[in-house]
Length: 369
Ligand code: NAD
Ligand code: AHE
Ligand code: ZN
Image 1 (cartoon, protein in one colour):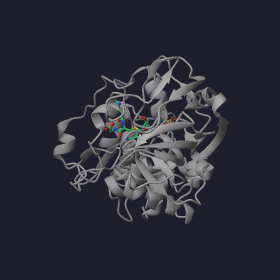
Image 2 (spheres, rainbow, N blue to C red; image 1 turned 60 degrees about the vertical axis):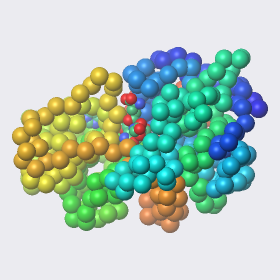
Image 3 (cartoon, rainbow, N blue to C red; image 1 turned 180 degrees about the vertical axis):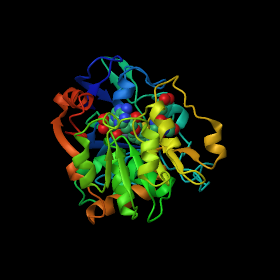
């Protein structure tokens, strides 16, 4: 079939909206009509050329929601008409990783996914006879896409696509990092570095579990108002405090954060986030994706004296199990999504969404098909 897509032909170049060819689903695969997709900072990172797994030409996008239109042979858990959210972290429920309760990182199709291919090692997309690569197993910047059955969460049919697409990455990553990865307890003091599409969801996750202080750190003063709306109790702009940021946060929190989160992708902030964690027990979680070649550093004494450093991918969520629950939380009013979607655009204007992200004007832009 033909479908409209925003294609990344090369790194650092705007996406081009063209009609591409899409092959139907093979065994274990599903054809999905994407109804809406969010623009995540990770798409921009890959387009920048800094991602070692950023291969071109490709169809980017990994934060979508849509409807199953056709299933390939052997697909048993989904049928045409089902509403779904694509999962860049699949859940096969059979691999060594899925069977270990300590991780959400299903590895069943990780190798081919990282090479921009379907599990059988081929692509379903092409343009003028040239093969186009998939991205993060999702390629939601195409109106129709093909995914493995294990990379789709079935969700309730009354949830609006233009909001729940954000659960495909940002919401789950932020809220999940608090609940599933860090397991923040009621009464904890939490510090969040970076109040963008991910950090604001960390804030609402911390509010949801009953955190005490929720400190937001951002160089963009415009982020303070939204942070407070989502439960932030204190705002720190590093540009405005005189002196050392870590010392400032340690003092503000009465000894350091019980839990800190880095939601920017900056290795210097990762260090500050670790070092502002409380001596003896503070846990710092890295969410931000740093450029290839970047490395983190700290004095090992920071860890010897009881701080712990960890990371979180897709909020530690097991997609097919947890994503439908997070959709319920949204529909039941337990978490908010609507105010974070600051802009909507048609596919033809998708590049404007990345420009607004660059200028710090948007939290989330959603493309509506
Ligand atoms: P975003 O651009 O919406 O937000 C980034 C925020 O960081 C902005 O508010 C910006 O003002 C702030 N910031 C930039 N430099 C800063 C500094 N020096 N000090 C303080 N604040 C600073 O990005 P996003 O969509 O929220 O994504 C954030 C990061 O998380 C990215 O690196 C993205 O790739 C990553 N990410 C990781 C996962 C995962 O599963 N681990 C999932 C999604 C996104
Ligand atoms: N390909 C990059 C790493 C990108 C990365 O860390 N991705 C996160 C999700 S970001 C979503 O916006 C992730 O889930 N990582 C685990 C995994 O298996 O990819 C690089 O630098 O190589
Ligand atoms: Zn993302």
